[in-house]
Amino acid sequence: MSIRMRLALVVGAASVALFAIGGLLGVWFFSRGLRESLDGRLAHKAQVIASALTVDDRRGIPPTSLGSSPANLQRLDKRRGAAVLQVFGPHGVSADFGTSGERLVSGTRLVAAQHHREYLDVAIGSPSDPLRVVVSPITGMPGWTMAVGLSLASNEEAVSEVELDILIAGGAAIVVATAGAWWLARAALAPVEKMRQRVAEISEHDLTARLDIPDTSDELAALARTMDDLLARHQGTLAHQRAFIADAGHELRTPLAVLSGELEMAGRPGRSPEQLTQAVHRAKTETDRISHLAQDLLLLATVDEGRLALHVEPFVTAEMLHAAVAIRASRASEQDVRLTIEIGAGTETVVGDALRLRQAVDNLLDNALRFAPRGSIVEIRTARSGTPDEVLIEVSDEGPGFAADFVPHAFERFARPAGARSRSTGGAGLGLAVVRSVAQAHGGRAEAGNGPVHGARVRIFLPQAEDRATQEGRATNVN
Ligand SMILES: Nc1ncnc2c1ncn2[C@@H]1O[C@H](COP(=O)(O)OP(=O)(O)OP(=O)(O)O)[C@@H](O)[C@H]1O
Ligand SMILES: [Mg+2]
Image 1: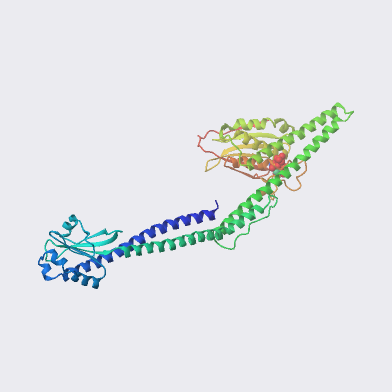
Image 2: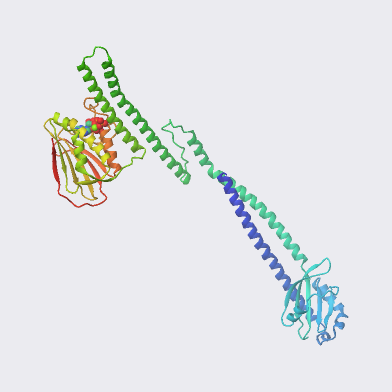
């Protein structure tokens, strides 16, 4: 059910309840007012009649004598309007006017009325005529009581009229309120509907489309702005992903083309065993490159999806670093580069995902080895780093270092400095992006820069939940 309809129904139901309660209260107060005014008139009438009773009557003249002079009452009645009257003496009804002898008040009521005035509703005659009756003692005539009654018919008629008026007015007001609520809700929601249509129109290929923000400073304008921001973020992500896929495809194409070329050459007739061995070697290099690329791409895609699951637990730092160094030992010795590991005090074990961190360290070592000159040292160092409690893993080399203008972009995906895009000197430009993603997934950060003297220095900072006892640092040389 639409909001318009729901709002209209709620307003309608609320108006019905409101008018029902208001109407009932109104009718109740109105009829009480009428009754009170009738009681006032009755009291007055009773007083006038009592004072008009003859002196003889007051002295206790037998009821018959009162009954025998109805002219008195008739006169009174003519002066005061239609009324019924009964005078009760010690022996029952003593005088009666206008009731055809039907008794107005029961005996018990009469006894109560000996002391104070009593009001009651009575129905006499057939069809019965509702009466409001006041019963009061007659002053100066102990044991004598009189009952004066006035018809309730006109009161009841007035109440019925008021009820009908309230019903008609209430019904009309309910219809107007419900329709008004429906119309108001429709008018208020019109910009929302417009926005919805606009959003529905925007295709996933349109990366620049925006909503029409209403020229107001109300909640709808705020909603439109927020939706616009969301749209911009989504479009940004989409553009980013498309660029990522395009770049990834581009980076994969080259090694795959080389691989295919090598295999084709190897398959040609008349290849010597040496040529075949070389082709296999080159094919292996390209396969490794593709596999490395796929690994980085997979990790970054997982990060983008927000589902990079880390298995964080304490691990022995030296074990992880030695393993990373060991598989590069022959390459390093070929390049005459020395790989050193220095485990700082309090970092013998580190809390983190050892596999992901290994992937990051692998990337840093590959970079360092690529740029390290012959006879230089590539150093891996770990240390405790200030507060909040962090562990630093640093890889530094003695190569040319990062170009100053490239440093701010070093961690961007597919980022490589201008002039370093050839296959001989560079990879896909994903290694450092992976390093940063891994650091951030741990709640940490990564920094790239140059050492104090020369060479590149990349640092990973990992927050450590628990404080561990400081232990003696030690340095290990590999090679
Ligand atoms: N130790 C370093 N010394 C000098 N420049 C470096 C160093 N490490 C990285 N760079 C520069 O930063 C660029 C980006 O490095 P990154 O590791 O992200 O990508 P890559 O090594 O080119 O490719 P990939 O790691 O994906 O195979 C490199 O191309 C290189 O120019
Ligand atoms: Mg790299």
